[in-house]
Image (cartoon, rainbow, N blue to C red):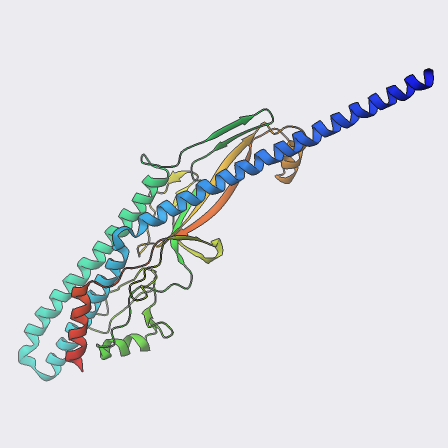
Length: 325
């Protein structure tokens, strides 16, 4: 009888220990699963924000149209500058008229560069308002479980820039052989694509060598196909300006060209991490107390490409090419 009771007691003790061990394992798995869910929710939120911001950057193809207008203004300044130099050297009687035409094109070029600066400033301010300002669309979330408390934070850091290897959306105008030759010699054109390099100073010969143009990095349309906004690998992103730092807008943020990509670093605050999970996270983050642990993710979105040239501009380029031949 005593042997039977002893065997029964040992079995009961073993079952109790196994149940306790299973409970610990399930609790640990549930805690890690909660952290994984929190991280995935954070990642999804950052991805949604980056895509929303990317869509806003080139809304209605404003950056692509600005590139086209800047290129046309630069070409006009080049043509009138060449005309003025030719008139001074060969037709002095027409020098005053040529100077008048050149000054008009210069004023137009200065107006376009000022408009580009204003559009860039507006785009940056729009991004700040969209992400951390009064019009912020990020919906905060809060998850509370017995072993963890998780809450999202506003975007901690936001940078605007462009995608490495993406030229501007402007093709070289082969109809203007003089300008094409000058730009090729100055290495302003990508010989593989026939597109002007982006985020680079596009100068002109004298007397308009003081005018500086800069085109935004933007995928050019392939026939009538326009590249869509998408997320990309963080390593392909090249920053131009930091517009949000520590969750606050950067007042002096600026860049020369309209940006075409955005990098968002989103963070979540994990508190009340208990047991094995808490010890593991505090060890991994170098913490020895019960302070909250911040988990952050980084997502990069790039805007849609430039649209096809408007028919009026395309037809004028065809006419100009015919007249120069």
